[in-house]
Image 1 (cartoon, helix red, strand yellow):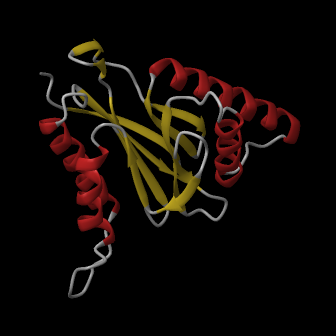
Image 2: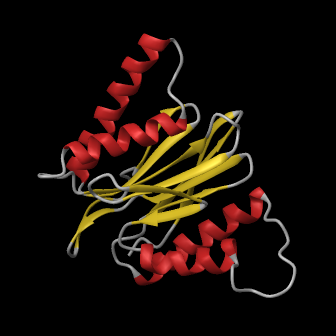
Amino acid sequence: TVVCVAGEDFAVAVGDTRLSTGFSIYSRRQSKITKLTDKVVLATSGMEADKTTLHNLLKIRIEQYTHQHRHPPSLNAIAQLLSTVLYSRRFFPFYTFNVLCGIDENGKGAVYGYDAIGSFEPSRYNCAGTGAHLIMPVLDNQISRNNQQGEKAPLTRERIVEIVKSAVASAGERDIFTGDQAEVVMISQSGIEKTLMDLRAD
């Protein structure tokens, strides 16, 4: 399970570290989040082999772009690149479900959600994986708050991180494929910070 939320000048990505299929756990410490640049990360759920292949391919393409243009690509450019790479494999697609997040060229947080063949849309938040159906209603209620009456106080960075961590921990209570630990990756103008949070290990 992976979750990304964009703030005013930051973005946060959270992904659990359990690698499993059926009732078997292959690893309790497998990251689902990859740093692509100092301001962009990619969070991916799905088949581990396809995820590794896709992430390595993107890192190579981004490195080539950086050498050619002498600066890393923007978040929007990477979003389009990922869409193109996924769509190029549409007849034999990568079995991955991706959420891209980071800081755009205007210094704003941004999130892009993808399907398996590259269709994508920007949004304030998105999630993918086996726990997504448990987490998305929480984000709708706590972050977008579209159907709530009364004044909506702006959400601080700390409050958004608290909401996302709580949502992932809650998903781990019901979803056997989500658990062990969660990587919490904060992306801001000052760089990327990563912390770990314990989840259920059973």
